[in-house]
Length: 275
Image (cartoon, rainbow, N blue to C red; front, side, top):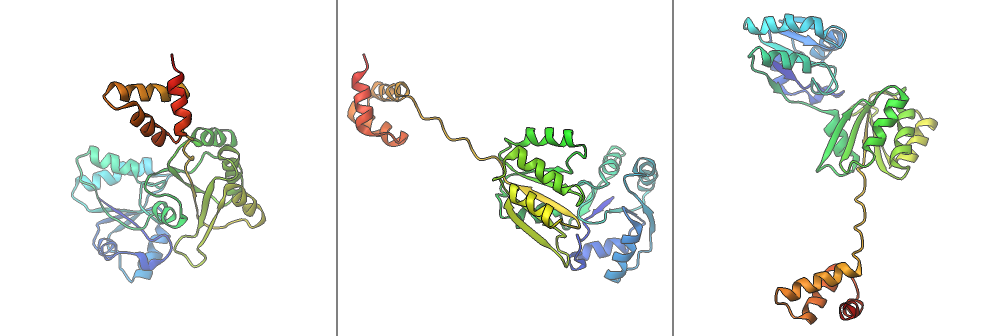
């Protein structure tokens, strides 16, 4: 079984391997068969294999049929409307069933809205977490955002255009209106747009100029809490520990004062004031 990474919008992003697999697979399971046929036409590729639909509404019923084809020796390719299958798209159920049946699963990697938006956002990308689509119900969505408000990693969400105003308003309420974020829409397409601004501004702009198309939201992680200032007793204890290890008191005071960012004279007085 082969997972196919489909272009997000720009057909020029299709890989040579994607073309080869479409032209050779015995079965191509597509989230939207009409979009697959259009993609094949734009790529000038003939799909000789059997094309079947595989989407949220029929994946439970169709998965056993595809697993039977796989165990019978057929090459089955799975493609969604854009990006990688299983990433907030159909695919996980079939991957799991294929693996359970002992069928090897591989991928022809391709574009991903998650990593594309993350890279374009201008926000930290060394660590991030993908949360998919937020809950549709307001109460569940707000509860999720409250739990995520202290998450230090950059967060990535998908959202539908008709819900993005409410989602941005809830994010601003939970994370604070000044939290940096980016709204990425229609990635790689003709009308690609990246709005980079604090959540409060993005929420306002979504009301004034509602974004259309496929939307990916990227939100900065929670800032690190400022380190608590050490007490005088803590500083005196550090000096005492260094003295006990053989460091002269004068040198111990100087070192602790420099490391902790406190005036040397203040620390000197605290040390000499101890019983």
